[in-house]
Image 1: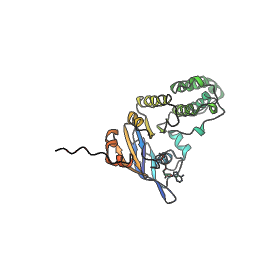
Image 2: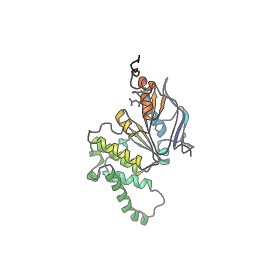
Image 3: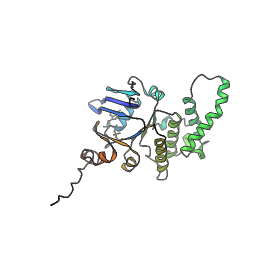
Image 4: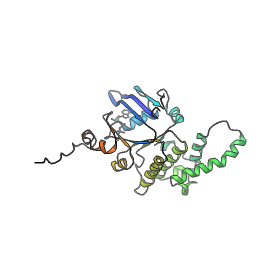
Length: 257
Ligand SMILES: Nc1ncnc2c1ncn2[C@@H]1O[C@H](COP(=O)(O)OP(=O)(O)OP(=O)(O)O)[C@@H](O)[C@H]1O
């Protein structure tokens, strides 16, 4: 089985600056990988390259072994790369439930007669309500998306991503800007996704406690390069991470004898 998502020598150059530098990495089903690194390391740019928001200067991206380098963001989303970050992509004048229902409909595409549209309508609404329940937004299902507080908008975009049933779930700082009581809702959601099994989840996250509690694997970027990759305990303890990410070398054990 090929990895679900893979990058080979993925590189992007902005003028003279190489923001992502020949990153080769494979992401497998059933794994949550956290991508960490200092500010400006290239994490978001790496996400943008994989989800097709920006084109690579060189290198390839493969989805289930198929080269998708030539596809833009829409084509990759259609193939199953889901990303929750695009609050701007919510339909602001539609209600919360309508936003999710559209995602459910987009997922269940196919030839539709007027009759089949009618008969499927109830099913769409029920499935949209199911996702709203998962993200704790049932209480505001009839509220206009534009009127939601920031944290609820983020939860809504997660519901939309889930409704699209992607192969890869990409979360870019999912708890950023959320109030303290909203953070556990999102973390529980990601845990639920993980428990479902078989999902490929990528997470860019600054908060190391979040990373520790969720990740099966940590990939560290520094100056655009992949500098460490492995299980969380080993990666966090490694000198390269202590220096590159935390800005300090690990304290040496007191010398014995
Ligand atoms: N469109 C762009 N044009 C020019 N430079 C860019 C562009 N996008 C990103 N960069 C630069 O590329 C580098 C990597 O940025 P990126 O946002 O990917 O880092 P990051 O690791 O996500 O940082 P942070 O943790 O602060 O979000 C930075 O130096 C940034 O200024």
